[in-house]
Image (cartoon, rainbow, N blue to C red; front, top):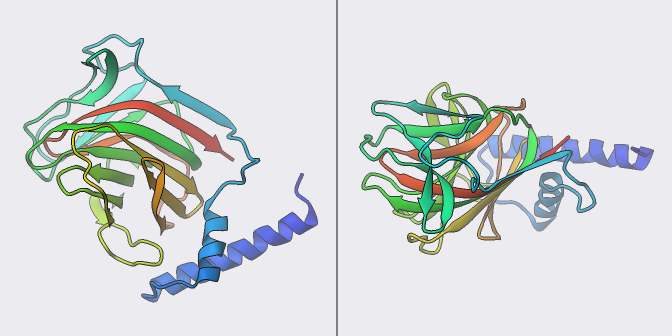
Length: 249
């Protein structure tokens, strides 16, 4: 039940968020410690709040060599895409295997049954190959192949970048407190498994790599619920496993 004091706090936090967004729109990047604390509160779910629904995908019991039922692949640009359940030693994964795409090509696969606005996502991914690009990441609030959000980790560049794909144009978004930096550099990702996680709450997106928070982004382009899934670029051959989704209302 929402009490009057909780309602007033929600109004206050909404006003704070609007003020911060206006400041960012005016080119202001540096934030105070007080603003950081306010943003942290805006961008996180209360520890006591449980997701309305949750899903876990380990792909272990699905038939190998096939695109899993209930998932739909997409791509943009020239080339093709090939998402299949594959073996990784004794483990089964969902893999993007097509390795002859140009640099302007994007591969996507989304789950057909999950639609959410506010959520927590986590995926283990491993960059297996690719000359133009490697690695991959998550998509959320997916409307269609030309309109959605992306966050990806790239072992060739050793960085993590969050984008919006709007009307077919991919744009990297500025980081809260840092501005337009083209994401954030990381420790070498290599060919090991890495865990990319994301908290989405309203216009606030918090990105984590291997359990460590990297950055936050604030954006209002896509505010409606959308599908979730995975993303790779160009000729990247990438394995995905242990996908966790928590949906909040």
